[in-house]
Structures are given as structure tokens and as C-alpha cells.
Amino acid sequence: MEARKAVCTRKTGETDITIEIDLDGSGKTEINTGIGFFDHMLNSFARHGFFDLKVDVKGDLYVDTHHTIEDTGIVLGKAIKQALGDKAGIKRYASFIMPMDESLILSAVDLSGRPYLVYDLNLSTPKVGEFDTQMVSFSTFVERRN
Image (cartoon, rainbow, N blue to C red):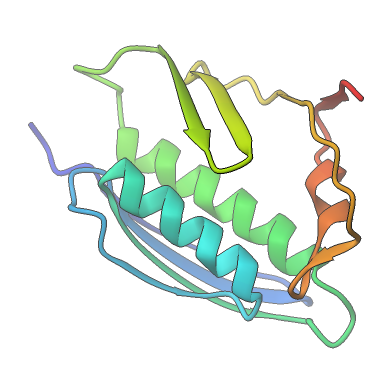
């Protein structure tokens, strides 16, 4: 099997991003977005997914976190798609349920390539550290269930 690795970059007027991913890694991370909680979530994503992830982001955080978060998601999605290649040997669908402290995480993933997100969150604070919780709902393909 070919190595399922990718390196993707994106440079705009607002951000300069490089992401390296190894889907067959061990959960090692080097993540720097400038947004502590976002770094924590990306670290958890890679560590629990057992893939290696390097994320280096320089964004216009002096304006707000929007471009940094949005562009990082775009580059991460491209890196995962590139690393998956022809998707040989993997299943298209997956689901996972995890109880975590005072929350229950339910996730269903379809690697068909059609972007869509449904979330059911009650975000009661405007920020988690420097992470603006309103950024969660800024996806183009979001259906809110609140």
C-alpha cells in the first residue's frame, strides 16, 4: 500500500498555512495556529485518530480568528483528501459515539466528497479561550438543529 501522506499549503492575504498529515502515523502532532483551544482540538483529533499532523498557520489574528479557522479547515480537508488517494482499502462510511465529561459526541462520516455538516450544539459562551464559538456555525454547508 502506498504511504497515505500529504503536504498541503494555502497562502492568501489573510493566512499562510502548511499542513502535513500521515494517516498511518501514531498520533504525533506539532500544531500552531495561534488559537490555543483550536490547537487543542486539532491535537485531540490527531491523537485519538492515530495519525500524525503538523499544522503551521500564520493568520490575521489581530483582526479576528475567522480566516485562520476557516482556511485551516480548507487546507486540512484537502490534505486528508490527498492522503486518502483512491481510497482503496477503506470504507466510505463510519460512525463513532463517545461519552466525554458532560457531553456525548456522536459522529457519522461519509467520505464521498460531498461537504455537509449538521450540528446540534448549545454554545453558551462567546469564547473558549481565544476561540470564538460563533466560528463553529460559519460553514457554508451547515444545517443548524437548535
